[in-house]
Length: 119
Image (cartoon, rainbow, N blue to C red; front, top):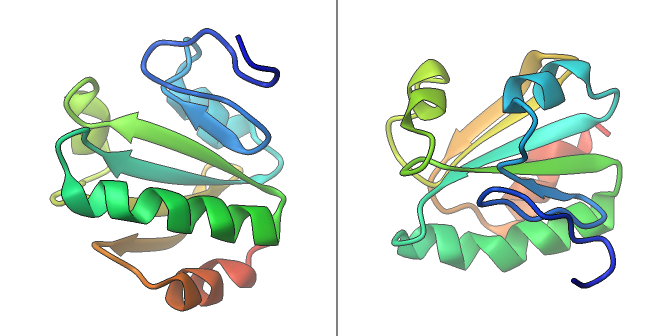
């Protein structure tokens, strides 16, 4: 297994990415001292796939933001709890509080502008 990748259920973790960990995602959201960007997605979603490299670029530029990817097909209850009605959908949390929320395709510039003030 490549360095920085943990065995998980439907998620990957590297420097800033966590995809559906065995831990409760709500624990990650509420207990993280760093900002956590939650990306609600589905494998079949074209716009979600388009956004993946953009999100990676932005998070690498900003640093200090964790990424938690939640597959809505595998965790529909989480999508419902966070009132996700369309994908891709992004919610930025810090210490459990929503700081920013956006849905749909976003340009790299707009994503950077949206997140910059919170790191």
